[in-house]
Length: 134
Image (cartoon, rainbow, N blue to C red; front, side, top):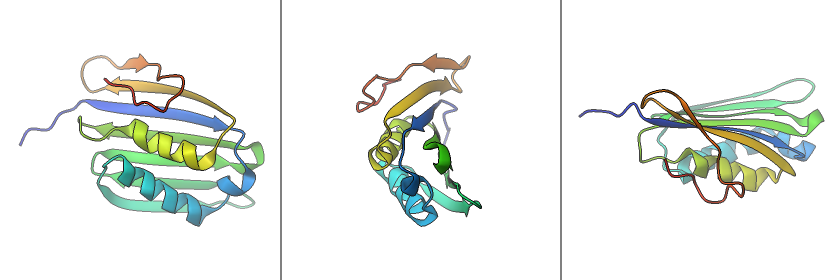
């Protein structure tokens, strides 16, 4: 079987998120697992870390690559990242799932097309509800 090197990498900054959404390690871990499942990814493992006095990092290792979140509850900020290789798993779905959970007041994002020549930056749909087709 030959594997494709093609991948999509979504980087999303989410602002204006409630402190309690960003500081609950168990809830974030469960939501990240559900986000990975929603996009059709194969979960290999998860790691979650709560920091003192606040903040959480969750990493979901996927067969297709990874999904991560780093939170700064005191600033209402979360950095989300999802990279998936191949054509069958859409990282936009996982990111949108997390945005629906976190309900930020503002987001900034970039989508990178990777592994198929030079890295190409593609600006996602401004509403972000519809995945970008690459």
